[in-house]
Length: 191
Image (cartoon, rainbow, N blue to C red; front, side, top):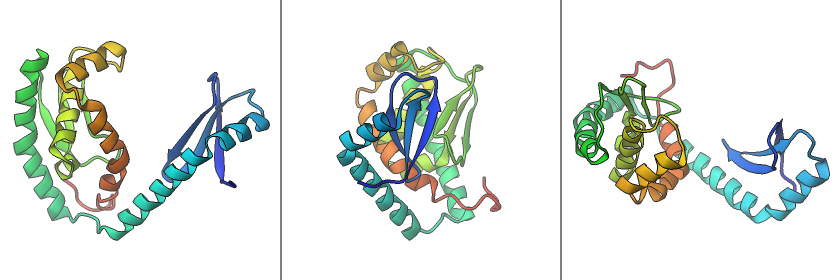
């Protein structure tokens, strides 16, 4: 078990592992020793191997998929403009909230957002995910109209309205990077 890893030290109290963009990151308190870090790596070796292999498989799959063309991206955005507002209209009364403008974009890092004014923003790439993933993001963003944070109360509301949220959030964490990698290069004209 000889991995290349990066140590990110901060004022945190515990050690943690993260796989990001195919890299192994060790989040460590400033005072953590190298021996403590190596013990953590040894203890979680199977987890590290599994997730590094998954990241490599996703990278290979992404390379095998052609980036979306500008035309394909525009078609996704047009479809999203038809589908997403309908889902927002469906869930808003269930949560008991109102909302402002709905915007569709092709974003590289976010699936959705909710402004303090109640405007909602969604990524057109959600059209490439299972419908349950789209619903989970719609519910997540609408619940921010009640709680502009990620507190226990916020997630309790999300789960009340969409009990399978964790399942589909996990799907998005595992498969979302593959969808994001299909975006055309930044110099392309995007919707």
